[in-house]
Length: 282
Image (cartoon, rainbow, N blue to C red):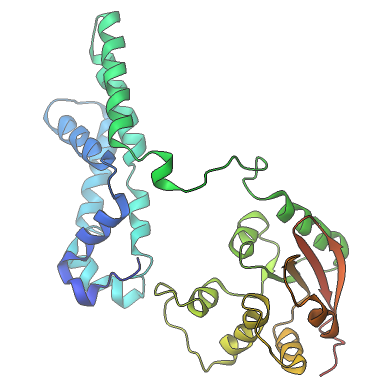
């Protein structure tokens, strides 16, 4: 998580990460209450799974002492919050809610308890506006823009390679690897984050050729900075870039064509360029 470090917080690191991760959502409190209920009086085999799982995690990855001394050694500090994903809070809350409903014998009683529990879950959860702004339905069942599906199809139809290397626009770079893992991303996620000034990108060696070549490409594609054609073309060659998927709204499309990028297709919002890095001139 950004601006949260073990060096600064020490044993409070887990607590602060947990607070930032859950925010105002109180599902963890409901889950903890269910675990306590199981320990005290609810003796069901399936409930034992939640108990055992929770105890194991508390002793290991949620243990402040374990985290303080082990996590930095494996360089997992920035990604530590992902350990919160493995605690089955939502399935646990659903399970305990159902058990509570079935614990009531009367049919009307079940209905009343179910309505009360539904109200509690809605009240203590995080509504959509608190999770995302400008919420909109996905274009398709893949939950990615139709433009991304279209450009990926174009690349596969045009390329003879099984795993072509592609420079995607900033808004598609992360989505592309989730939708089509066969396409290799030229611009590494951490390199992109670091160039943007993010504090969660991890350690990046600015002087390494690995980063400097990607930075040249990002300077042109993401920030529309003026870079000598020869330098940009050299970066594309050294990164073995096969295709570039760029927004139609970019102001420097002529620059890419001068650099040897050939437009082969266009969707509503993106232009697909082919770059023959093997035969590109210096």
